Amino acid sequence: MRRVAQAPSHYEVELRQPGSREGRPEAVWRAVRRVGPDGTMQPLRFATLQAANAHAERLRPKEARVVAVERDGWRRVVEDGGA
Image 1 (cartoon, rainbow, N blue to C red):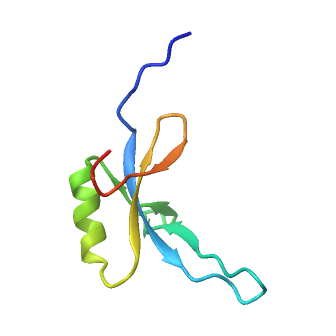
Image 2: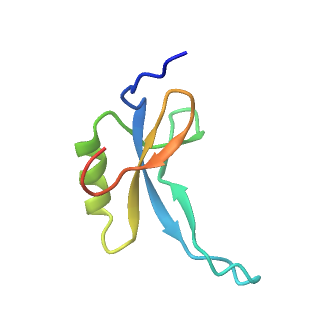
């Protein structure tokens, strides 16, 4: 079976959350979420990398990163240089 590179399903923006005080000094990344019409919380999705980067820039001075979500659910951090 040969794997073919495919475009990601969508992009998400994650915010850095400080680590807990119980001996976990590392930070945790959590997706920016929105409240849907039915009251459920879902990650804020972007169709293009440019839209996700623009939203991440608006979140300054908070530390944010853009994540590409693949069709099978895998997530990878998008570097500043592009996909």
